[in-house]
Image 1 (spheres, one colour):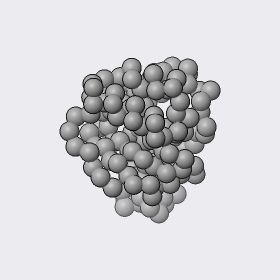
Image 2 (spheres, helix red, strand yellow):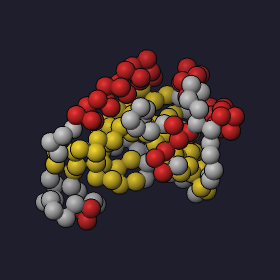
Image 3 (cartoon, helix red, strand yellow):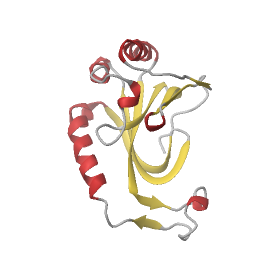
Length: 164
């Protein structure tokens, strides 16, 4: 895995997106609900106050509801390109414990145009956009981003697309 440092915006971002379009056919992203937790054997150390297999809802989840409305409106035009949607607590190799709605989308020129409607890779984050774009060639992860941490990784073709 190779970490790509520095800003990925404007011309550099558009060049990266064009390159990914040539190499990849699938894009994924996650909608993170920071108000719902699933306590599993893998993440129980993060939530010692809860029992194993607990499903915890925090009372004030209006922020996520509003976020999801904004995102659903944004992605409504691309729904016909969706390959699969599922919910998990693990995404892109990371384990957070929060409920994550994961979307797997066919990456074609229509989606390419949408990606270019943003100034940079790290603009893809809450509260206005889906988070953590990952690009796949077949079932192999090619590039992974963690927008809120401003991290991006090129991954030699070893990490497989997880469809649950």
